Length: 457
Ligand code: P70
Image (cartoon, rainbow, N blue to C red; front, side, top):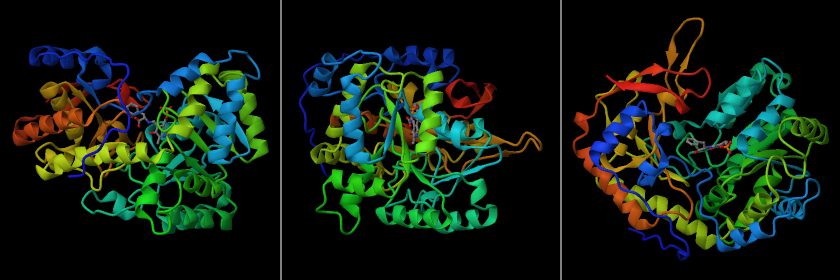
């Protein structure tokens, strides 16, 4: 097993609180079997998300002290803009408080009702923002990505032929842009290859359709390109990122992931008309264009985070820590998506709990069991998050994959924490027949997984 070495030492610590099994049984019932409703103080290892949960470096914390809180033209905005321009290269850079605001602004401006947005795979907020603006979110994941049992280096890739067919069928007039999510979160945190990005670019260019990146985890994706794709072993992560983004016309970014910050994001585009319309809307709903819903100090932390995240020792550790957790589970026969992705290990809940049908939410049942067993919080990425009921026929379509994601915050947990998590999951796996399914007792019309209430069947 490759042992992931933490390329940092610990200067500030935050205590964790243990709970008893009885306490956790009570807490999970009170939370309506929804892990979003559990107070974080009652969680031992929190793998709900890698978003906004990073530990900042001493350099970033120092940056907070040089925050300039001027309403307009803060120096931190210019530092942020310079970092983003160097890595991403786009002409217009518009800060937002997080990724979904960048999505909301973009889709508010570019979509008209009935439009289609193809993506290798939309994440939940992206899909919801497309739909909220009258568009249809179309996932065009390559077939290997949909198969949890095949191991390939770039399972996040776009199905380029399917993209071509979609454009042929509906015409460019219905497709204002194509999105590419790097890494592909909903498909297991799997990377997209540079070759696939180039091919997708070629199709877009031929039809005159702009290509945008959902760039949340771009540095992890670039590390995989360096590690796995011929021709990139001797290129720096910065150079790889610069090449990658040179194929796009813009991006949305949640800096809460590879910005190594607790809050922040941006929208970038080369299209001056779109940038102008987005900026008007930004001022109306988010803030002035040189702060975009953030404090000056947040912009400084982001500027420094973007430079730090390109460090190869850090990325090797990051990807290695995820692989290390995955290897321990795999050796014990626990079904996971392979190879492991950049930010999380994904348990295959259909294989883990074959006795629970999809309409009884096997992923959520497994996530609940993990909290009860060991105080670990994970998140379901399956039917609770993605099943769609047709309002006319009342019929429900279920997603191909029924996953539980163990998302690892950046620079927060040690490899010993990972071993604790692996042991807990292995012990649940040994008595998996005892786990029962769940049913929904309350749900909301958008993004229901955040607030749904459930009960045991
Ligand atoms: C996650 C969080 C956010 C995200 C993303 C991609 C590929 C855009 C966004 C939105 C969301 C989440 C999910 C479950 C539990 C907690 C949080 N992903 N695109 O963990 O960015 O959150 O800044 O608005 O992954 O994957 P933002």
